Each structure stands twice: as structure tokens, then as C-alpha cells.
Image (tube, rainbow, N blue to C red):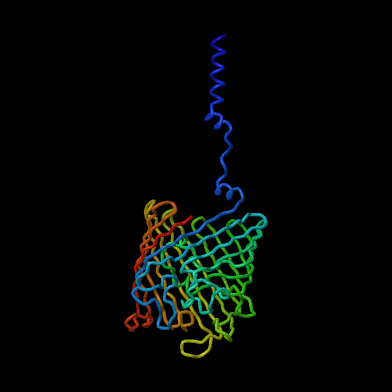
Length: 386
């Protein structure tokens, strides 16, 4: 009996000890920001893209137009290409939205008309804007229908603005010179089945937060996934567009057909083919006359995952700017690129790239004042995705 009383006394004393009492009464741990966001359906994602590149030319064509999309900086340059931050809540039913901003040098290339401190062609590089509201749209989804309204990325092309979603460091010719970057308007998608979806929309035009004329552009698209290994996207854009952003610019119909096919051979190997064909009425042609300017191009990709950290991506393309409307020079421009990627971690990749550009005319400007038919580049890139 005495032993039982003594044991009970010791247990009560232990429970009353300060450390144990605090542990017993401790409040549950506060929820983390990540858990709160997950529970609310909100995602925060983005990229940090830092690079060093060496370009043999000045980064300009003889027309003064940039001869690369983002990597046209001084011949030897460390560059904070972009800090991309996106906040989104996109439920499968009801209202949602997304806001995405780009900070860094890339913002000066993709900045839309109406958001720039000046209003040059997006390809000219005279605008050194370092911030861009790339996407800002609301969404309403119900059943098989999804509608977005605001500013959003184009459907065209095999590549995108976000660095981590591309397989090469440099962007393709087609990405920068054949297609738009963004649109401001309304877009509706109907999912016919798991294999087919259709999209239609109306917007201000190519890269215009504020419409440069009183007309609108129509977009139509079909996405087909007939098998697990093959996908085809077809996009059409048509509408009256201002020939340039200069005051009093003429207006004419601009058309674009964009096709992207992807064939997945294995989990480690896939091929991509991108074709573009565009035209602009009432444009000033390279010979000084006024007429319908035409451009077309084809890009082919091969992507191979060697093992867990290592991968390689090759790209070859040709772009015919028959009337000099997109590059300022009537030319056929070709390029070949090889990029090797090494995944340091799940979120970080280092990339090394070599690239060769060719033209059928001496269109690449060099610092010695002598134009040449080609240019070379090498680059290193670090991409962190969160």
C-alpha cells in the first residue's frame, strides 16, 4: 500500500515539473505559409535566370534591329535575364486568376505597347524597361469551359517566356520574330475530350496592352492528343494591325499560322517541330515599296535526357524574312544550337550552350564596321525554379 502511494506521488510530481507541464500544455505548431497556400489553392511559382554570354557581333543587324531575342547584350556580359514571379489560383470550377511579373533585362523585349516609357518596336532594344506585367487575368471555369480575360501569353510557338520551361538558353528565331509574346483580351477554351480541345478569342493584337488601332485580332486554336506519344497544336491569328507603333502608321490585315508537333519516343527522348507563316498588309518592304510583307520559318528540336542530372537539347531552324519586315533586312536567317544541362538539384539547373547563326546576306553588324553573314555565341546559364 505504501509503495503504491509513493509511486503515485512520484508520478504527480513528475507531471508537475515545469518542462513537462510546458510540453503538455504547448500550443500546436503554427501552420506554414506553404500549407496555408496549398489549403487555399494559391500557388506561388517563378524563375531566377542569370547568364554569361559571349556574342561575336554587336547583337544588331545592319538595320539596327536586335539579332537575338533576349541575349543581344554587349558581346561579353553577365546578365540578370529575368526574375519571374507568378501568383495564381486557377480552380477547375468557379472564379480564379493569375498575375505574373518579369523583372530584369528580358522585360525590355516583351514589354507590350501601352506599358513602355517609349513606344519603339519590341525588337529594337531602345527601351530599357526592367519590369513587365506579363500576365494579369481573371478566369472562370465551369464543366468543360474555361474563359480568361485580361492580359495573357500567346498560344503560338514551341517556346515560352519563362526560362525554366525551355530546353535551350537562347530563344529561337521563331519565338522572337515570327510570333507575338502576349495579348490583352478574352479567350475561351472548350475541352471536347481528353484528346481534343478548342480555343477562340478576341484581343487588341500582338503585344498590345493598349490597342494601337481601333481594330481587334481573332485567335483560334485546336490542341490534339490522339495518342500518348503525339500532340499537335494549330493556332491562327488574324486581324487589322498597325504596321508599326509610329504615330500615323498604316493599318493592314496581319495573319499568322502556327503549328507545333511533339513526338515522344521514350521518357528520355522527344522531338518537336514548329512551323510559322505570317503576313502583314500595307507594310513598307525592303525595296521601299508598299505591299504585303511575308515571313515563314521552321524549327526542329531533339531533346534527350542522358541520366538523372544530365541532358542535351539540339535545335536547328530557318526563317525567311522575304520583305525585311520582321528583321529590317530581306534575308533567310538560319541557326543551329546545342545546349547541355546539368541539374544541380531538383530546382536548379546549369546550362552551357554553343550557337551559330547564318544569313544569305551580310546582315550581322560587327564592331569593326564590317557586316558579315554569320555570328557565333557561347553562353552559360543558371536557372533556379521555385
